[in-house]
Image 1: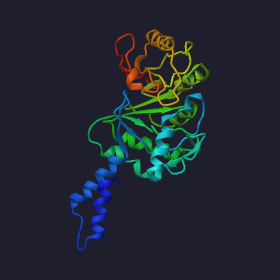
Image 2: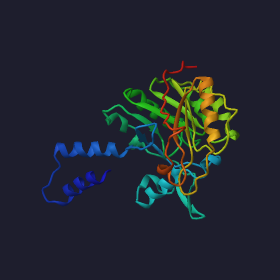
Image 3: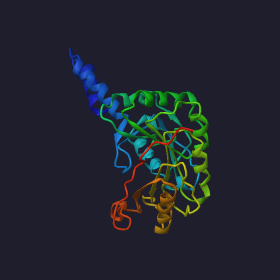
Image 4: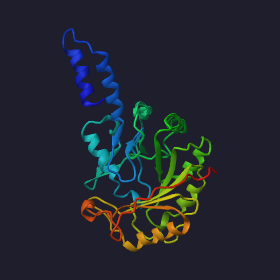
Length: 287
């Protein structure tokens, strides 16, 4: 519950004879829905929605994950949802592997009247092996019930995504993607191709190595970004140009998110003197 909502409830419980009005209760419900949606500065989306919290370090792209740092801060602020999801090791926050399913967040998008692009589980991975298929189906039901929103689901586990999604309806407002940080995990692209989706996309972020051998056929969109934060690893411009060339060859839209570094605002997001904000033009045919 939001701070304002808590104040309203406390007022009703502490002041003699005080009763909440219908307007007060509506405010509580609205604010509680807003608690489960965060406007975001991520360039390729409008908002985040996190019905799952917590994750597990999987490959090199996870090493400096921003979500680990954010989860640790939220836990320190007393946000129960993130309790026990991280631990301090070597002076840094790391995932513990604890996964939290937030049933209260499931219907939050139904309260958002304005259409949005929604990044699903920016603080976790919907297709983590400890997220039950029944819970994923509940997320699907919410997305099906809110066609005004466009949902962007990103996973480092595209094989499970393909397996689970094959038993679910293909929704025109749901985009499925996977993260690829370097050439060691290029297999994820092929695994994603097996996922039935209106749009398939790749996030090459953090890009920490060349992916010159990537095949983006049947992939509609590629996001490229350097790592940011105190321990950021560098991104070679050659790697970025390689991906743009592959996008032009294979017909994928190219979105350059950032150069990254310790101060991503200082390094900016221009490539060859301009920004690249391409979005997928058409939905892929469901497979």
